[in-house]
Amino acid sequence: MSSSTENVDDMLSMLPEDILSRILSLMPTKLAVRTSVLSKRWRYTWTSVTNLDIDYTRYHRSNEKIIKKFVDGNEGNFIKFVDRALKYCRTSHVKLFRLHVSNYHHAIGSSVSNWIDSAVRLNVRELDICVIQYELPLSVFTCNTLTSLRLELSACDFGGWEFPSTIYLPCLKTLDIVGCNNPQAIHGCCPVLESLSLEVSCNDEQDFVLNIPTLKWLKLICRSGSSNGNSKIMLRVPKLEYLFVDGVLCSFFEMEDVSSLVGASIACWHSKFDFLWADILNKLSGVQNLSIENFTSPLPIFPNMKQLELTGTWRHGQITQFLESCPELKILIIDFVDWRDFKKQKPEKSMLIPACMQTNLTTIKFSKCDGDTCDMKFLEYMLGNAQVLKTVTIFAQENLLIEEDPCFCAQVLKIPRASPHCEIRFRTRKLPPPQEFEYDDTDEAEAFY
Image (cartoon, rainbow, N blue to C red; front, side):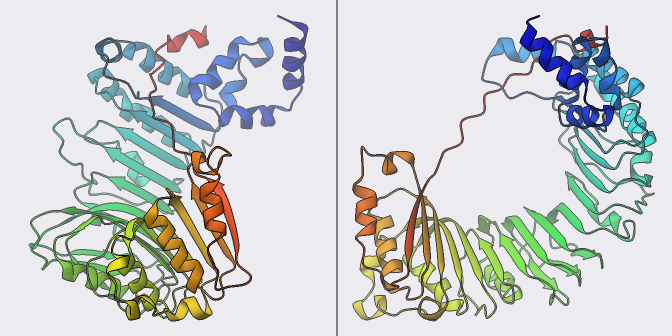
């Protein structure tokens, strides 16, 4: 070992035990355990971690060898590793136990319940479970220390899972459930619940009723069932501050007393019936912040709207319709624009300026600018008519902003501005790299030797 490496090791070793524990708790458990081979000082340091992050998943290419190696590989060593990690864990209060297993193996499946039971006995506060499993131990649903619970259970036959008849989680504040057939079973079982994410299957046979007086944040993922547009999603959540709706819009919404609702996000990419768009937007007309991906109906007036985010691709007519419906709008965030319909507008209509652009709109964020003709038309319209605009931030691909192609920036800066105080900023929009990871199936048990 080099002297520089020894010095670094000595510096780390001199840190207090609780600091080292915090550092190792930020790592996946597999890596934290491997530090035991560094020196005698480090041999048992990992046993004081407060987070246990265990992952047996893999992202892979279409490679038969990789897949075969995963399926027929080290399940036995993985089971032995998790068993020992829980056995040697010295902390009496685990902050987080995260268990993600994407491969079904009968040996792993029979061990999952024991692992979760062990975490509950360690007074776990946060559970994040993603496994191929029909059911979990009952101790999960009566754990007195749980404050956050995420359950994503996938059955081998692609069926859903169900809550047991006995549930009581007195300290639970955050609940995220995926694939559950009876989510309404949580009513009255989580007395301090504030954040909830769940899937809703819409059908005409039964309305979905959610009655949680303490709830402040709600995400609903709507699954299209046999609904003909007659079913209802009934929300009795008087303290709700933020609502997120995703999936397929296929039911009416009934919301009792939404005076506390500040923001909403509608990420539904499709609606079974156009009148359902009008229904939900009317129910949300009092919000201050709205993010929306699509709509196919007339808009209500949003008298309190301060921030509007338009995700996806938006035409000129849709954008101006929203601007006309939000007289108090201050911030506009938009992804893509398709202004090919702009030239089809009659001259007198295209010159009408929405009220918010005359008195309130100060900030525009154009988050996915490609620099094409449609983008330039959008910028010309907004810059030329927004009279109190202060900041326009344009996120464009790197090739538009480098010296090899300075024309785009120059063209934008030459656009006449209705506001004398408007500043234009350019930022690089970086595309995320493709994910091609392989599971490292090195012998998990080696670190314990």
